[in-house]
Length: 382
Image (cartoon, rainbow, N blue to C red; front, side, top):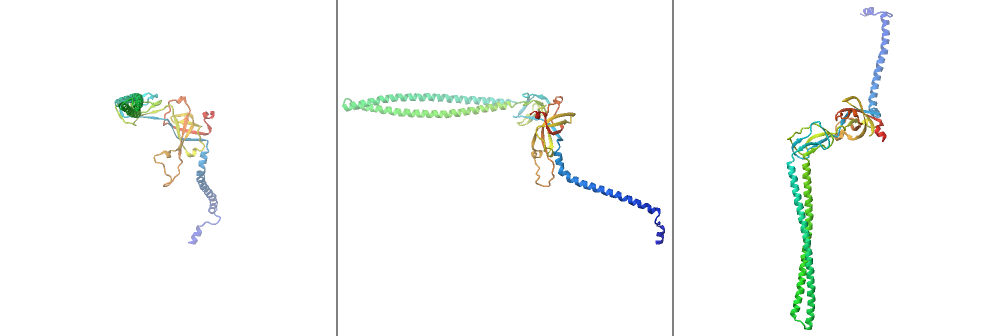
């Protein structure tokens, strides 16, 4: 067997043996290069995995132009609701109709409210009559007191005369020039006038007390009159609620309210969009806002009008992220935690653009770029 193998093996120096040696030498550098490339990629990947999380935020925050497409046009839309219940008797506005402040929108049946106004007016008239009655009684009571005081003056005069007569009769009695009967009559007259004086003074005291009672009744009547007038004002206000008018200029949205429909207090009837007054709310990541300040210049592009660039300025930033205003705020102190960059709303005021006047609508998607290295022209002038 070994002899057969030896016969098959080529001798040293044979061409086949010499050709294998250069091929082996070529494979070794190629494998080394592949291994070096693999190592470089691995080291680079590890380096990026470490460097990017540590420095990415600083790099983003350091950019002078901060851009986001999480931005939309907004407007201070005013919802119109019914302030009293009733049946709609008139719909004076159509869907998507321009309106001016004070224009009639809806009318609610006012029969019941008008009756309440008349009832309140009657209550005011009754309270006013009661007050005038008390005032007349008070004036009459003053006259009664004055009359009683005049009666006291007359009684005092009679009493003085009776006292003088009693003194004369006492002197005449001592000298024997008169009878005891006349002296007794003079003494009785004095006592009678004293009693009448006490009675009259007590009567005046009662009359003055009655005057104080009338004064309290006067205050009560005045308070009742004010209450009735307030009730009348409320009834008139409720009657005014049956006529619904536009509080601002703008364009109405589609309304589902129809004539004859019954609405309750608080039912939303329609909304008014104050066009063309619109602004932009851009939701930037928190890592983009380190250099954003109010007054900085902003470039805006609107998806509806490609190729048109608008300008504006940063008005103000939201006081908190949207998560803080959600119905169920996230509680990061429980369960597993994954850090997610929060977004903060930025309100952007648009500069006037005559060629797009009246064409911008709230809800349109926009792309905003805040230039943190310069202020808007209006802010620069200030």
